[in-house]
Length: 599
Image (cartoon, rainbow, N blue to C red; front, side, top):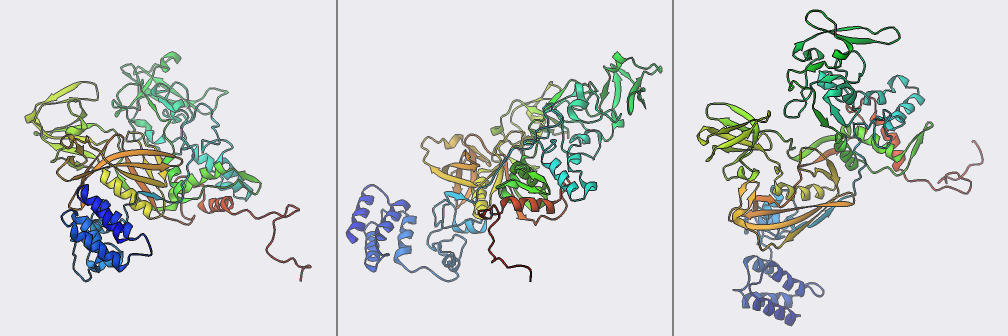
């Protein structure tokens, strides 16, 4: 064995300096047997002395950890932020500031990032999470919906839940489906009584009631062809505090409105509009009335896609908190499929999570901001600057994910919401601000994913940095350090500005969402045993989160107050229980001895 160690050391020294990998190879060679003997320790010491000028400092300390007793006491020999005594307790090296060689000093890993300082943690996994449809709010023309994809569907999970409530004599509270079917967009007219239903995935101002499900004109029904200005110049919603805020207009003429009884043979009320001279609008004129909005753009020709709206966040949460249902369940004559049960778990998920850890900030495609030295603040799109133009050393962050730059060395062109452009001279500008589409710091990503998975449960990402939110839970992560030779440090722009003079390391990571991993690549800059900067190479996640401790199927379910967690618990536990073995005659096998009769 001594000859093997010496031969290996000779070869390593002949090829250049001996680094951490070389030192580990020597240690492994010494371990090739029943532990490391005293003779092997002597040979390692001899090698260390013979090639002293070839060993890098960290490699030397690695061998000293094998050869010499571990330092003890209150001191901090390696200046890593952990005392010698604490290092002995943790099993880390008191000579190596970075025991596992991942670029982070042991004290930083333990005290700041809550990581294991003995492991680079390249692959981490927890019990597999599950997912399903995101239960879209929007329908596709069928008012009954699809039981497999809509929580408000006829014959779906909540319809069956109501049937179970009725079967158990609680008909007065069998209103889960009724609540779910309330229009989700009622808040556009200041109505807080809202549910989770939208008739169409494409909202149209020219057919406002039929596409949104909202009774804008207040006649108590949904009418085809009602024109409403509910989208502003930027394409965002323009809500009002009440229906009375809308002004009915026919061209440039302001109208008055009356609710009258419907003609004989029709139920409810109808809306009639009148001109200033008291003339009632004809049927054809009525079709051209626009309910104008003080917060809108004055038109009713806009549209908005909401097909992506749904419960992806609650599905992701349910897939972390609960096991995936294993089988259908029948209670009191009502059969819930596994998909029904996933839907019910989605509905109660928020009520069963105590708190949330959140990293990053949601990107909402907010307008850029120009603040002038005379106090004006103007919103729009700065067309003369890229995102990297904001990432300078003196940039700071405001309101979560806005990058703020003080002053400008050149004029700035701002495109306003109405399409016009305005140019500001450099000496007019006090501040410039832009929402950062790459606001997730790669350093936070790198350390938090490891930290969270080390806690033994999954977490979730919005893995798309665009304005739409798609939450996916994940259960496994793989990190691989890459050797990149053509990296241009001078042009590298990271989360905290241009790259500095620290050590740059490159990583590729795979996050496992179900059976389909996504890859995120990035670089990190290390200095003094901590991460000081980092940048994405390609796509980046928007934010990530994880639930707090599980609750116990009790409490108020604000998502749908008619869905009681206590009853969902009964359904869920039946769906994941181990099936009893069945005897020859189709009856469950009992663990108890049969009796001869009643005693």
